[in-house]
Image (cartoon, rainbow, N blue to C red; front, top):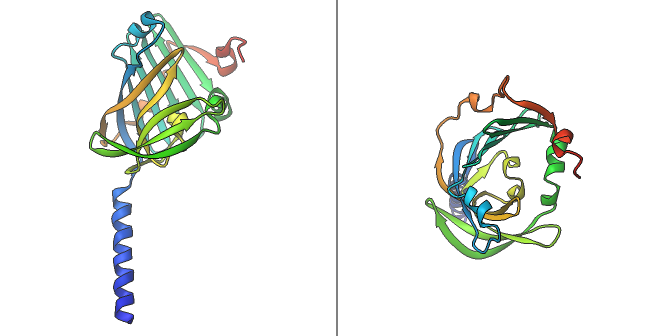
Length: 220
């Protein structure tokens, strides 16, 4: 009887260790997303400006840098993992802005994503070799979006993708709004090589520095 108990616990421990090995804590990576404009948009000119746009996310511990790259220019959001402060760099040709935000400012700027709940469905698809489960995100105003996520990759820092921060894994494909446009982000590649610290260093000059309140220009 004792022998059977030892075998049972041994097998259980093995299964748990295999499961933990399958779940990789995402502490350092470069994740590239392709951006596709959803059909039926009423503003084709705006859609054309985002044609071929990409998003690249650099993760290093609790720090992150998310870059939105389009024909208009580049916008980067850098989250300092130590202080929680956020810096947004807008680089659109001659117009270059650096917006400094506290963690509270960051939360305020993402208030529409607070309280998102997810309804998990049985449907799955494979994206870049990862099996991804379908979920429906429900915002506070009742609107919804679709996301496919993998439980195999668990980001340590979840603030870089605020609308998906409550998912138990990495969003590999998801819907989101950019201004008046609805777009779909899909992972095109994940690189686990070390990310240089230089990615999180802020420029010393060349940008007009603004606070979050100044950037709002009187808007709520």
